[in-house]
Length: 368
Image 1 (cartoon, rainbow, N blue to C red):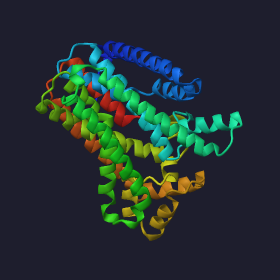
Image 2: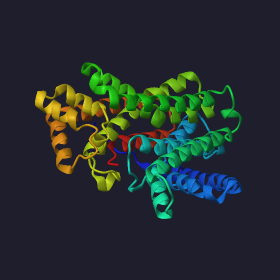
Image 3: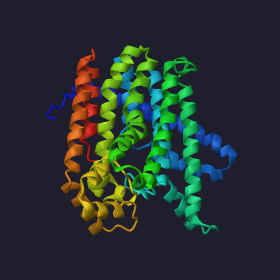
Image 4: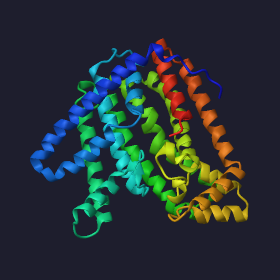
């Protein structure tokens, strides 16, 4: 895919102002929640610290898509509604990351200890009784649940355009339910994948990425922003033609990074997806193409927490040799091309178009 990076000068200032407004409102929202939690007990502070720490980082991809979805549908520049919706999307993303790290047994997030590891460390440093790991998991689950509650409260604060029976509310509700279903499909495939028909593995893996990631990372945030600005179903369908294939390409890039990414850039150990037993499209293609011995080695290596760097390199070689890596790169290009062709068909302000194209390119070309 050979594309020219758009000149960001037309939208960069507007986008940066939106980021600043989002950061300010998110901080203010969490300060209010912290005050409410302080009335419960000072002991709840670590939950708020974990949420604030996680929500203060990240690329703000979902919130930015929501904003430009709002603008593409005729919404006013830097209006309050997409900022408030962005707060809700960022909090939902934080909740999903907290729970995802528990499920995936990930010790780090963005180069720092994941939330359940933070709580386990707190347990050990405090000299408390019983099991530190179990406390860490339990506390992190509750932190994620609290963050989900905050996300709902933040979205309600958007106002009447996010109220009951509105299109924006329907999309927001659908997004949250689909992520949970997609996450279950992911863990189901990890434990049951080797017992299920291998010829269907790629189809199952693509279904996982669609519902676990692609829709909530790209399609739904863009649509929520558009719906808040009054976009009709035809425009929302045109949004989807751009954002859904882009979201799938985004997750496929994530899957490649989960096996071949540089730990210094991704903030995750090398080959972490292999240790977690992730049956991604990349892995499914490799298993389908590998010969008997290589396929058996790859199959037996998936989900082994004790994989050393030499083991990871061996599995990476198998994945590359089968052509699976090249196939996924080709699929990323195909989906990206489809997405940008759909974007070209949308009638958009030049700044909105440039912003969406820049976000899309960053999503599929990222290294972390």
